Image (tube, rainbow, N blue to C red):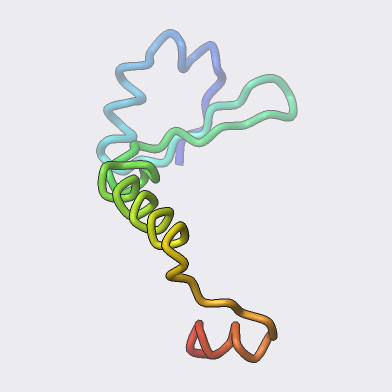
Length: 83
């Protein structure tokens, strides 16, 4: 793990992005009490990708059509979740 200052990061961004791309954990410190992790984002990290938007639209349509299940107790929640 590398811990660097925000100034060091600004001056050598490309170097640290390449390190993060190779799996190195980079922590950028900003001031005395703020730190940030530099992590590559892949398609699985983006919540609202095309597939997720499609699922949300389908769910909204199902709700409009009354295709919903009403849960009224904690037991029903456990059953739904398979607990």
